[in-house]
Length: 165
Image (cartoon, rainbow, N blue to C red; front, side, top):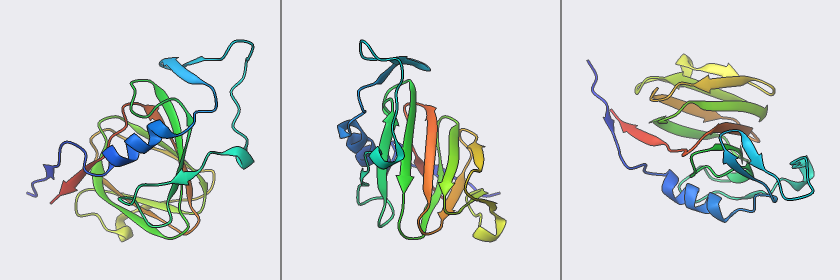
C-alpha cells in the first residue's frame, strides 16, 4: 500500500491567491454563495473576451502562465470564477483540493489522471468545450498543452495541497 503525505498549508497557492486579491474584479463581488452584489443601477456582470483582465501567474506556476479573476474572490468562502492561460505545455504535479473543482476547457487540451503515481498514459483527455469536476481530496495530476485556457469555478477558499508519495 502506498502512503501519501499531504503538505499543509498549501505549498504553491498562497502566492497565487495573494495575487488574485490584487486583481480587479470588474465592479462586482459575490456576497453569498451564488449571489452577486451588483453596483447600484446595474443588472448584469459582463467580462467580454477581449477585456479579460489577464495578469502574470506567480513564478511557482508553469512558465508562460497568466490568470484572471472573472468573479468573486478565490480566498473567500463564496462562489468564484478564474481563468488560467498558458503559452507552453505544463504539468501540475499530484495534488488535492479541499473542495470540488469545476473545470471548463476553453481552448487547447488537458489530461487528468488520478492517484499519486498516475501517469499521462492513465489520463482522461479533454478539449475545448469539455467540462469536468474533480472531487474534493482526490489526488490528481494535470497535463496541459500549449495555448490551453482553463476556467475554474468553485466555492472558496481555493487551495491546492501537493502530494509527496
